[in-house]
Length: 288
Image (cartoon, rainbow, N blue to C red; front, top):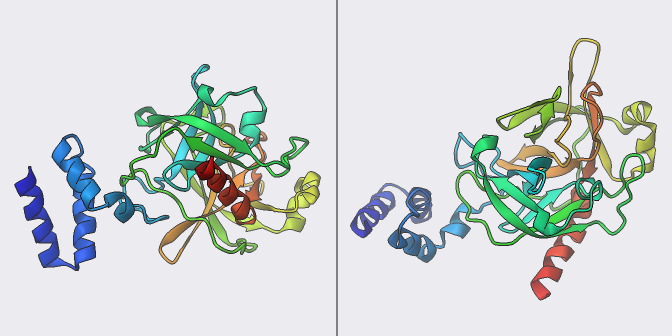
């Protein structure tokens, strides 16, 4: 096994730059981690770091490797969709945890596949709701950070998404991608679903949902016509609103509205606005 891996590394180095060669070998190693030698070389090359470039798709079979299912273990029911932002943390909607009296031990997170029946589940260590979260009407500050009990191994089907460094929201008419595993027309989807929707203006959104006027940091997207409609639906609370910029995917918002499937415009909470709070949660955990 070691000889084969060394030959593979030399082959990669001879045919491309060193960093690219190591990256290619790390991708090979992700499929060979069933023995100690492979794991040792994986650690030696620091493949976690090599493969953890946020917002990068490494495998066409997993076009959105940061999207996860948040699941109630006791009821064996999907709660929400989440988005992996690093090796231990996930962003989702706070109202997913406020509707029932959850303990962290009651929840686990599924990832690693585009098929709902082939997910790998990791237990939750804790969850932190935004301190100003209020579940009245359309929930305010509807953001939560979930912390996994252990770090995840990054693979081509498990990758973190990037969070924008500045709060530059998508503009009206800009097309964004929404992804989730939830129910559509009360039928559970077996695979990850994706749709592309246009952002609508705040004024248009308030005309549809007057309560949006009270949400300072929100984005609305969807199609509204007598001919066609598309939106997030049941079970997709916390679903990410994403944009691909400069070859990387960025998380701009998460779904907060959990209305009927017939209502084709959905409301999302602006994530860049909460980046400082998200980082403070992560730093507090490191110190505790």
